[in-house]
Length: 87
Image: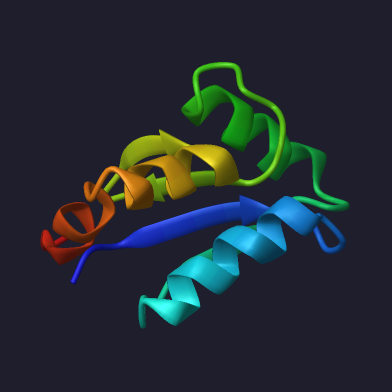
């Protein structure tokens, strides 16, 4: 199974939605809460190519984007193959 990392904040509805999709698919993920952690937020922004909104999602070290991007991958049938890759 793929290694999934999601940078999020505590009360972000998009973060909640992205995590729901991953849970529905039975995917375990590592969540990094950047709510009160400016160093982690800077790390996220750097890794995400300047994107500073949450969530920012990475699958096997590859930045896939935010919640809308995750759902777009799902709609296109491209999410499951990514999640099947080994991390």
